[in-house]
Image (cartoon, one colour):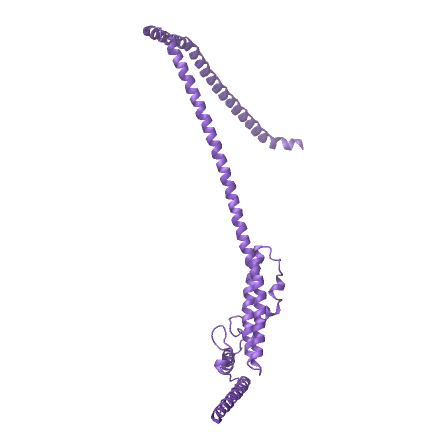
Length: 320
């Protein structure tokens, strides 16, 4: 290897080492600048954590502080309390956020196997949505705190791990609640199908019974019609040797006999009608007589009462 080649390799190694050292120095300088800026409240916008609305958390805090200072300068009587202020990155109040963080984790409030009703499953899902929002807001606040520290990366990784574990616990409860709701939906569908199947079988049995009854009624009507036809045919066979004029005379004689019987019963029917009319008249006369006697008794009673009232003032002094 010649001297030129050795010089070239030496220069490459030198510049590579210098490049690595410069990168290390640049990283340290940037970390120190970020820590100093965070301490002075002048963090660059690119390094600040971004909230759910897209606004950096530090800017939202500064805006809130500025609005409070402006309110005081304008002579307003009260400033919104800290418990009522929205948490950075969301629309949740500080009091509600503290309340959500104070309660036990979701997987402890709903241990595995405790979701056994539709109401409990829906309640668990509602609380899971609240806890998930609180976890997201806590992650934003943790990011804001991490940028005030020297070891920013380690702090951010720890906050990210806490968020991942919390969301994993929430996801377990959500999965169990969703599984229960899906199973409840399947059970309800199976129950509806079973009821519909039973109803279909009942309707089929009823239709079969009705069809059998119709067949029985139809067979009976056919038998009655055949019997009537046989009876007519039997009368025809019996009278086939009798002359037609004889059958007419027999029919006329039968009608005349019926008319004679009706005429014989006519006097009896007339007597019965007259007796019925007489009974009606007697009943009406009796009713009128009873009413007349009742009116006379009432009139006599009234006269006696009147006479007693007239005699009472004259007889009272004599009794003394």
